[in-house]
Length: 623
Image 1 (cartoon, rainbow, N blue to C red):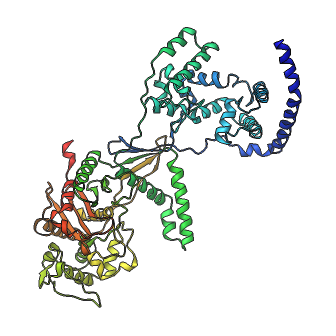
Image 2 (cartoon, rainbow, N blue to C red; image 1 turned 180 degrees about the vertical axis):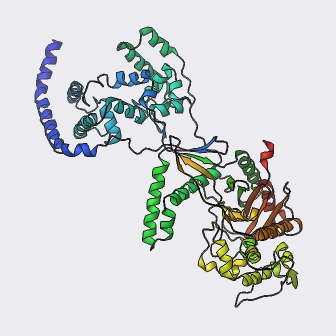
Image 3 (cartoon, rainbow, N blue to C red; image 1 turned 45 degrees about the vertical axis):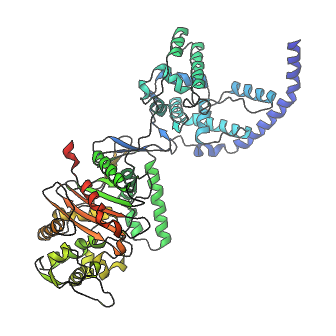
């Protein structure tokens, strides 16, 4: 009786099947009209995917990873045969025999869906699944399915089975933004794929069937049941014995989930910004933007640069940096603790190695979080008197015969309508240049800039990396650090390295950028240049040291045979600066409020002096 009823139901379904066949036939004819263009439209090279950016410190240890998707592509020969069989036996047992799709499976699925009045029954081969991953949506329509078949057929013509299987295993989704079986191994077990047991291989292979339902971090038991089902499939298909299957199912599974390494965010944030500058420099975008004929052209170049940086960043690159992790950690901890005793006060600093001229430590702000506003290289503030050594005194000694023992008037002084005043409105008589520098008198600085000449002095600044100096700054107010926009702590530290020995080389954090194969993509290759004569350097070093010993730098205490620095205070006490150098490091410190605010009440605490003392400590001695 039951067989008779089943036969009657099948007979009644024939009209429906005929209609469905006619519909599919029509769709195939439509899709076939595009056949000539399919070969050109399908490219079998790996699609653009987002691979991790790995940052290494000076010891070549990972301190930061940046990725949206975790991927670790592997060649097929590096994927265990057991793992390959898990997918072949469960997803596409006829993989090596079909032409991209399986007619019998498709018919079974169509018939099942017709009976159930749904489109849920699937019949996708591994090739079809790869096509869907790369080119199509997961929309369940017969139109999409027909297109999928044509693409799968074309894909099989253009590549080998091994290429298709390799791409599939490297691109399927394993949940939690993990793509590919190699990445799944390191993410869920923190071990490379070839070190996983067969039970663990079966466990991660259970995830792609439904990454939400079989997310082992949320539904571990469901994933385990799916794993056992896959093992049963291998037993059923005689790939392993029943006994071996039971052993695999009984093996305990213990996850060791990968945690994204995100140490020292102030340093890593800057490195990613420098990466953009490095690419721009290496590929000519810096020059293009600088010489753009109009804003529209400039914006177009900047857009092209952004696209290029994104393309490089997603290839899977490793960036070797000069980060000193011990120093970075100590500096951050000290300054964070110091600022915690204040309300909303901020600070920034940059430390450069005198020996290598590399950036080894950065402080971007109180309890800095990655990609926050970075005060070390993004906060453009007035530098006050910390600017005098660079714009006034060094150019003066470089271009004239004056010495620190020469005298100059420190009294009232006006050039046109510009009438600078000394700190607190004090009026002095004749003083030596050494005294004027030591106590940071303002009117002598303006007089000396007049002696050197504005154009001559600013020509010396062009040798450095000041990005915000504009033509409007070419005025006598600049002698006191009065600029249209200002400078950053990193720019100040970078320029002060010229007082090490008169030789200047731009300071960078990046040593080299390599691809997944270890090939060097980018590295800085800028030449050193002499910016100050030996006589000027020695004079400036003596003056900077005198500031620490006898002048506004009192309170600076650094264990070094040499230490020199210059302080800076801007109008209304809204910025405090110290820039200077020791035998080992050159650095700059800024403190202030993001919304400028008078800091006269905390001046006596000399917070910037304390920060300078900390970041100038030679932590290498503790190694």
